[in-house]
Amino acid sequence: MGRRFASLLVPGLAMLLAVGACRRASEGASEQAGRKRLVFKYQPLWGAPEPFHELLARFERENPGVELVTEALPNSSDLAHQFFLTSLEGGANDFDVLVADVVWVPEFARAGWIADLSEYFPPERLRADFFPGPVEAVVVEGRTYAVPWYLDVGILYYRTDLVPRAPRTYEELQRFAREAMAKSPGVQGYVWQGRQYEGLSCNVYEALWGHGGEALAEGGRVLLDTEPAREALAYLRGLVASGVSPETVTGFSEEEARRVFQEGRAVFMRNWPYAWSEAQKPDSPIRGKVGIAPLPTKSGEPGWGTLGGWQLAVNAHVSPERRRLAAKLIAHLTSPEANLVLALNYARNPPRPSVYDDPRLRAGDPFIANLKEMVERARPRPVTPYYNLISDVLQSEFSAAVAGLRTPEEALKRAQKQVDHLTGEGE
Image (tube, rainbow, N blue to C red; front, side):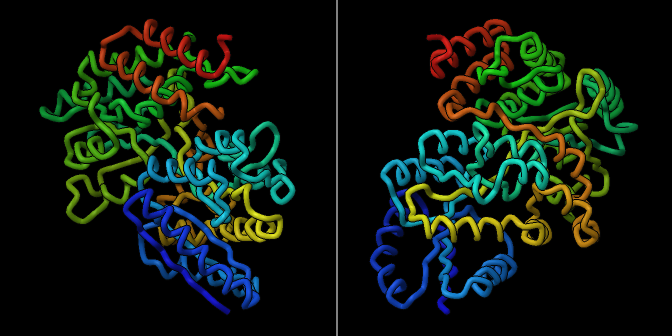
């Protein structure tokens, strides 16, 4: 039985395309030897490779005659997206299973690039087995086009030595921040991702949901020029204007915010779960002084963090036989046991609620186990095939409002008009 777990960390798109050309030359030999080749393209997991390789080896053992080939994409989401745009639009069929960012699935499904997997993963079964947010991101017009693999969610970090508890409302967050800043000169209040990029959109949607808003209308129109959206942008702008957040936050991505918080120079931080392990390192000034909580809201109910993460899909250009094998591989890699392997060895958050209650996860990584409430409330950005087309508009207008260059009203009217034009709603 052949096995080639070649994790190829290539530097760019041209190299990725060259890899496919080289592999096609060797496919004939495998087929003549009676083995079915199954090619899986994924983003690096980072960490010891052995647990992941054993997960793949188990699939080969359970499926004799299958030769599984793995290829790691560049870590850049933009590069990976560009690779798939180029290859799938060109009809490439030299890979079978691919990872898709949470915002790519509707786009790829509408283009006919990824296969309808409803036969293997009916939407009702996904809804029974996975959290609501990830299912909403992969079920398009009632059909399943991908299966959640692992996910991310926006959460609130806070200094347990500087505030009495996690704030539940926006008013409490600002009050707690000001009180802590008054007692600890030089400490900033709240750091988050305010730079003009996708991270800002995540923060804005979290604030929009926290003010009672929705991302989409019932008919699928992207909602922007609404009262909750105006309140959300006014709130974020107000954090900067009032000094609760430093003016420099308008240039922050995840890492800038993390560094300020980890150096002990901020009371609160919005970030992804990865920042927890950094904060707990032996040399971290805030080790043992950090708590996590759902994001606050206007009303005080637990907030909704933006859903991030990766899904597994099947290349629509491959043969029915390869599609069937690809679906079997996806079922294997998204099983509860595989979720547990990725959580314990690579700190990847499971998309299945049941895994959070597994005693092995509670003992091996209590931090991930404690994310269940926040993951359960994770929401995707607008589930629309046009998201990658409209994201530049959102980032530009959101940034202008947060930086004070436009009022929230002006920015949202401009954004709504441009987005309606791009999606055909204005026609």
